[in-house]
Image (tube, rainbow, N blue to C red; front, top):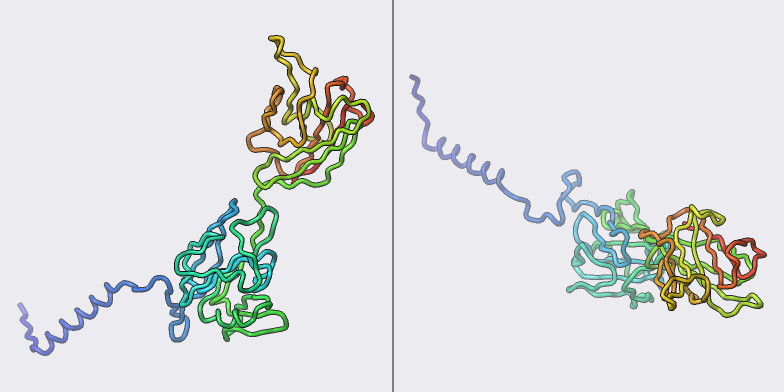
Length: 325
C-alpha cells in the first residue's frame, strides 16, 4: 500500500474549492421574470416575445414572454398609437404591468391612461373589427409618452432604443412588441338579394351567435296583415326540401287537433331558430347555427299563400338569398 502525505494548507485549499463548487452548482436563478441573455455583452435582459391574445372572446386575456412591462395598450385599427383610436392603455412605472391582463380591466397597481391621450376606454371588443395590442418596457415609456400621434413600430435591427422617421416612432424590438388581432367570432352576412310580391326581406348578422336576424315588411296589396304563417331557411340558392335547415309554420290547436296555414302569427324581426308562439317547428335550427362561406335561401309566406308557387311572381310569398363569411 502506498501512503501519501498532504500538508495542512493543501487540504484546506481542497476543502474550500469543493465548497465553492457545491455552492455554485446549487444556486437557483433569483429572478426568472427578466432572465439574462449570455449572448448580450454585459448581460442585458432578453427580448420581449410575441403577444398572445385569447381567442373567441370579446374580453380576451393578453400575455407575453420576456418580463413585465410598463405599458400595455390596445388600439382600434392596424396601428399602435397614442391617439383617439386608443381603447385601453395600462401604465405602471418600473415595469409594473403584469401578465396575464384581461382587456378592459385596470389591475391594482396600474393606471388607465386611455382618456389622457384622446382615446375612449372600452370594456369589450366588437365583432368584425381589427385591433392592435402592444407592450413596452419602462426604458421606452417616456419616449412613447412624449410622442403622441406617432405610429409605434418595432425595429429588430436597431441598436438604439428609439428613432423617429416621419410619422413613425421606431422602437427596439427587445423592449416593444405589437400584434394585429382581428375579432371574428361569428358568421358575417353579405349580398342579400330579396325578391317576391309579399314584401321586402333583410338578413342581418349578430355579435352573439351564428343565427342571423331576419326582418321583413309586408307590402303586397291584398295581404290580410303584416304577419306571417311560414318562414324558413334552406341551404343553397333556391328552395329544396332536402336542404331545409330551419322552418316554422303557424298552427291552430284550439279545436283539439293541429290545423296549419290558417293564421298569421310571426312578427318581424325573427332570430333564426327562436321559439315563436303559435307555430310548430318543422325543421329545428342547427345548434351550431349557419356555416361560413355558404349561400342560403330564406322565404316568408302568409296564410293566403297556395303553398306551391315559389316564383318571384307568386302571391303572398317572397324570398331572399344571402351569403355567409
